[in-house]
Image (cartoon, rainbow, N blue to C red; front, top):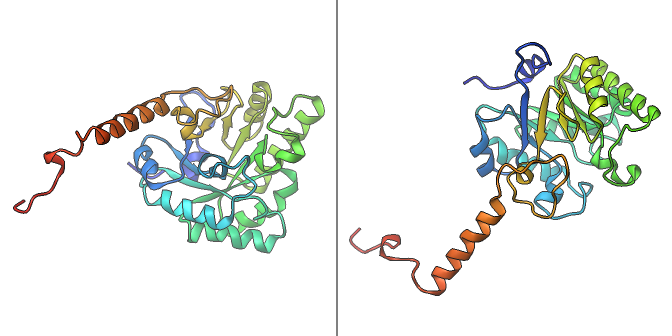
Length: 270
């Protein structure tokens, strides 16, 4: 099985017989190893701030943390394409720091590409990154790093002006050289219009069925995160219930002294 890369991803546009891109998040080696070969793209998202760290948003996640988690995930992947989020304020200050920070994610974090939130406002930075060989995945619509400016996690692009602004962001990203664009939290009609307008693949999350691919947080669709169940997530398993049941059984057997048994123990002569 050949490794998924930016070239193969670019080919996955909606057309007769095309295969939608499958993307998921991962934050550690164990999950990365389990999903490798089953999906096209693995994203080390700054959503780890909420999923792993228990924070209310993504804003406190640091570049060092993203490098660490990316390195962990990279160790478990042999086939999937690895993308890493550039965290809040790691690319917005100036071009020099943006290039340096993106470089760290590729060199130290072993990522194949970085993902950046924003459109027109960061297009010039993306252009320079692409020029020096750093692949960039765009991200527009509901951009979690702008949660306070957006007034919370709300669907974007409902008004005519907001719709046009997001379309212009998509065009700016394509012109800047991104190889794909994540569309988050926008009406399906807008996602379809953008998908038909741009030549690079779109990857939706809460953006309906007309994108060139889909991405979800792994813990969400495995039913591990019982505190967060948004409309756009389908639970394909209920592992929270199974995990609690397994831990309960383990605790019970330890208290009843039925575990460990001899078969789980070492002996002098073995």
